[in-house]
Amino acid sequence: MATEVSRRRAWVIAARPQTLPAAAAPVIVGVGLAIGAGTFAPLPALAAFVGAALIQIGTNFANDYYDAIQGADTDDREGFTRVVASGLIEPTEVKRAMWLTFAAAIGVGTYLVYVGGVPILVIGLASVAAGIAYTGGPYPLGYHGLGDVFVFVFFGLIAVTGTYYVQAASLVGGAFPLWVPDGTVTLAAAVASLPVAALSTNILVVNNVRDREEDGETGKRTLAVRFGYRFSRAQYVGLLSLAYATPFWFYANGDGLASLLPLVTLPLAVAVARTVLTETSGDALNPALESTGKLLAAYAVAFAVGLAV
Image (tube, rainbow, N blue to C red):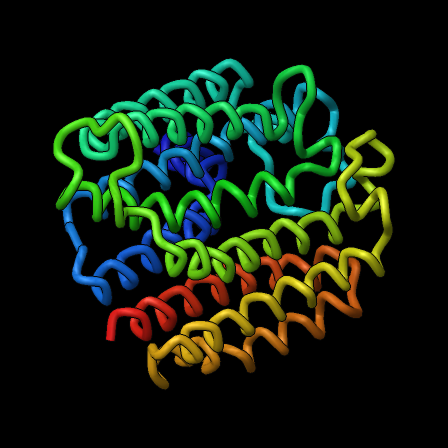
C-alpha cells in the first residue's frame, strides 16, 4: 500500500498542481469580463478552464520528461522534485501521460471548436504544439530564452481573449464560425489579458532566477542566463508594473472604482518582489515562486470581480 501511495504522490508531483493558477487565472478574468459585458456563457467557460488545465498539466509532464532526457535536471537542482530525473517514474510513462493529457485537452477542445470555429481550432493546436516545444523538439523554446514569450502569449494574451471569445461566440456566432464573429474579440479583452500575461510570466522569471547557475552549466539559455540577475529582476518589476497599471486603463475608460480592486493585492506583490530582488537560493525563491502563483490567483479573482461589477 505504501508503494501505491508513493506512486500516486509521484504523479501528483509530476502534474505540479501548484502551477494551476496559471491555467485558472485567465479563465477567471475572461469570465469576469464576460459577466460585465453581458456575454457570460457557463459551459464554454468551464470547457475553457478544463482545456487550459489539461494543457498546463501536459506541459508540466513534457517539461519533466524532456528536461531529464536532455540533461537539464541535475543533482544540484534547487527547484521542486522532477519525477523522471529522480527516478520516481519511468520516462516512457511520463511521456505517455503527456500525450494522453494533450489528447484529453484536444477532446475537450472539440466542443470549443464547435463553438468558436476555425480560430479556436488554430489556437488549440498551436497551444498543444507550443506546450511540447517549450522543452522538446529540435528547438526547445525554454532553452533559447523564448519561454517568457511563450508564457506571456499563451497563458496571458491568448488564454484571456480566448476565454472571452468562446463565451461571446457561443451567443452570436452559430456553430463552427469560419472567422471571428463581430464583437467577440474586444480591446477590453486584450487589455485585460495583460496583467495575467505579466504575472504568469513572472512565475517563470522566479524559476529562471533560482535555476540560473544550473541552467548555465547544462546549456539552458534562459533570459536569466543570457542577461543575468539584474535583467531578470528588472523584468520582474517591469511586469509587476504592467499588471498594476492596467486597472487604471479600465478606470479611465469608465469602469468605476471597482476596476481598481486588484490594487488590494499590491502588498503581497511588494513582499514577493523584495525576495526576488535580493535572493538567489532555492530556499528563498521556492516560497517566492509559490507566492507569485498565489499573487496571480488573488489578482485574477479581484480583477474579475471588478470587471464583473
